[in-house]
Amino acid sequence: MQNGGIRLIVCATLAALATGLATPAHAERGAQQLVRPAAHQTAVPAVPARAAYLFDPGTGTVHLSKQATRRMPVASLTKVMTAYVVLREAGLNDIVTINAGDVRHAATNDATAAALRAGERLTVRELLYGAMLPSGADATHALARVYGPGESRFVAKMNAAARSLGLAGTRYGNSDGLPKPSPGYSTAQDQAKLADVALRDPVLRTIASTRRHVVRKSKAHRAHVWTNTNKLLGKAPGALGVKTGYTRAAGYCLSFAADRDGHRLIGVILGDTRADRRFQTAGRLLDWAGDQVASEADITEDL
Image 1 (cartoon, rainbow, N blue to C red):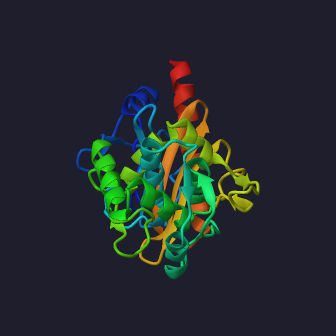
Image 2: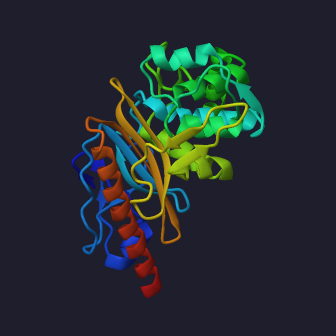
């Protein structure tokens, strides 16, 4: 069923058993059959962003799909793949020394930074927090430089990982999603699949779900306090992160997830024109999909 360009996909078997009738609607190529929601289900929330996708990886249910396979820049959602690759290349306690190029990369590109300084020595674990929470391009640059080694080799590893994960609509151009030299592209569906993979890694799940991380001063580095840019954390029940992003070309982007009633819901919003609206939309989508999950559970119990 289509509502404002949004396709609602629910479990056909449960809907048929609950209502005695399954009415097919227009479906995307390769998608599940679409059915009309049961009478007690609420309307899908409006999604003003250019693209969105929301699914339950445990059951395979796609709750929402809007332009989900459209290729577009995803800004700092790119850093989820960067973290994924780093965790397969590095030890968490490896020490990385920040150099002037890392700091200059963030400054000259007017990018968000973890406020790192040349000469600081931090563990890979700490730099992953610096890359994911404040979306530090300086931290990301340092990690790519060391574990490529070099940006181009690191990006090649990112694209190899994308292929191995079946992200056919994804091509990375750099390790941070900045416009230069090329931001690459992905899709809402691919980024949701990547978030699912990332959240299955306990280290990455912990980092993505952390609201505030403190690095205490030592002989090797200054003190740092990094706050997660994802405003769903601490507000939306069961929220797990995952990553925010913004560039002028990509618009405001959000990869998000939450655990509700024993189900993990994972979604992506791409190309919103308002910074806070992506969080509001994501919160409404999680509540709405959570209601669908609860309704299906009630139907199953009645059967």
